[in-house]
Length: 76
Image (cartoon, rainbow, N blue to C red; front, side, top):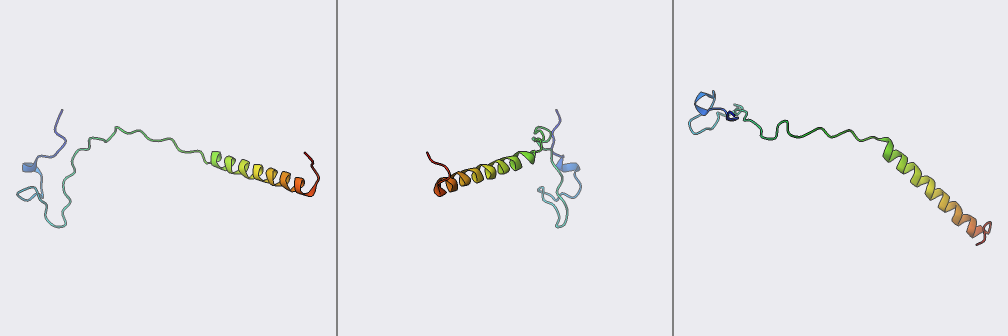
């Protein structure tokens, strides 16, 4: 396995001590996590929409039940 970091002796733009000149971009080093992570699947938007619609319908039904009890249409 090769070293992912560039060799300082052969890297253009490096000053002695490993610094870079103002305006220069430092050399890119290898990443130890590149390629290890997997793409997360996209979330389906329909699931939250269905949950919101069902919650609203349930709230309307409960409100209708409470109103009908208060008016006297239902007796328990």
